[in-house]
Length: 113
Image 1 (cartoon, rainbow, N blue to C red):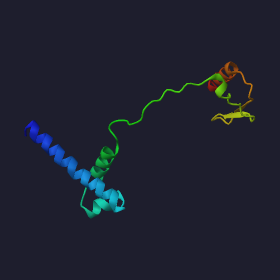
Image 2: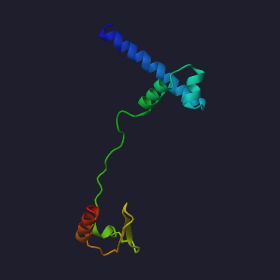
Image 3: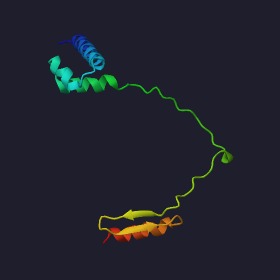
Image 4: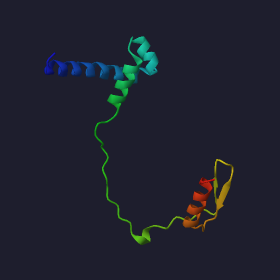
């Protein structure tokens, strides 16, 4: 089989599955039921469903946004304490004004137990 023959076969294969994927979408049937009715491999249909449904290129565009210090308010800390429950059943309750360094040291000690 030449390189051109392979390309032609791939194009025919893609057209064949694109037609089935589109028909499946219009049918309202589940993938499994559609495959049963058309004597198709469910796994092949799933492969082509995903392949033909996933866009190759992203159509989203990044837009620069500038924030001015006066245009937003800082997020307020939750008034409730945070509770960390370890697998051993030990829990640590952390108030809003916790020290990150102290918490890190405490967790390191507890992990070694």
